Length: 116
Image (cartoon, rainbow, N blue to C red):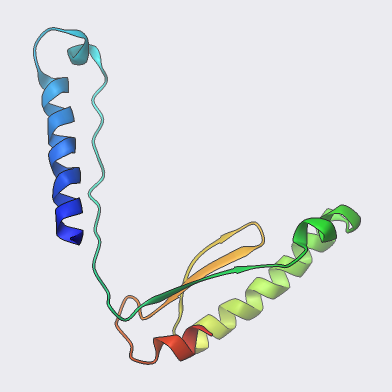
């Protein structure tokens, strides 16, 4: 199923490239775009966690911005240290959200315990 999706994406990208390299017509005037190579892998023993600060928007209304940043910095630093300790992979922080994954890049049978 995963490989099928990858093949469909590759076929569509090739079709777009063929149209762009064709002679004449409006397609040939389009700028050339190189599609990035996407690397993906199926990992049966992986979990992804999305965390969010409850009432963050309300807190931001009544708290100076420098203090909000300091709070997030302290919170995310604590989570970063725990992630390192339990070998959980930090993916991204987005605003007040923290995204991480356990069982990647190496499968781990204890991934459920580590991410919680």
